[in-house]
Length: 326
Ligand SMILES: [Zn+2]
Image (cartoon, rainbow, N blue to C red; front, side, top):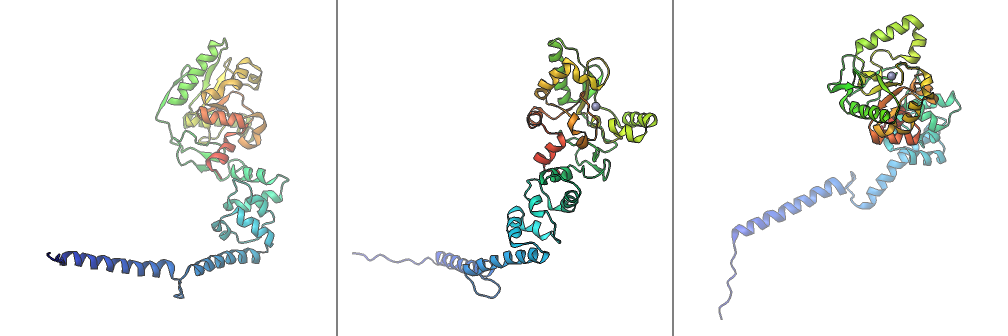
């Protein structure tokens, strides 16, 4: 019988040695960087101890600010450690306020301020501050990031750039204009309500900055700034500037009495099916900044319009609850 010869292939041996070397080096690297702590003692127990020390640091800070242990426990449930890092004083209602879903630590001064000066509950305080209405209308007005966003919020705190004009304006009704998707739905709505024997027309759609400026200035000349502001937007702050708003009329006028028409009843039942919401409801003047306008509708798409109708909220509240506005 022939003995099997053991062949040593030096090429393979070299690869083997290199691989073992890499494993060893890798092991030491992982040990030094991820397992070992700075004292050189390395084990899992120390990592756990370190985490506990972190927690104790946070506790200590809140404790020094004067929060009770009970409050600290709740605050740690409500807030991230980054949020807690941003707290530098003791706020009386922080526990209650921070339990609200839409709470943002960045607004804490304003939440606390409104809390001190009103009897609203925490939920209402967070909503009012996040929608900005704790400030007077037209205070600290911001220009929206993307005026083309179909869900853009334009009101007395958020305006579109003065030179903005939607690129997809098309005809709606007789001679008005809206952005194409909105126009498609509004045209369909007018056709369908007419088919039900009710006359309705598109009274006012997209308005350029020049038109809005002329309108607003005329109203101010007639009624003064304070009154004009209750029914007309300052240039840049008009929802009509977005190309997503439409005023609907049964007789060519825009009057509150429109709410008594069959057309309005029909809209109450059906507008959401065409992606439209009643933008300035009667009971939300304090939030929208506009008097009740039963004729003014905003296109937001069928899904969002249905949600807003079902929840009975304004577009501002929708933005806080579903778009993270604060
Ligand atoms: Zn309008």
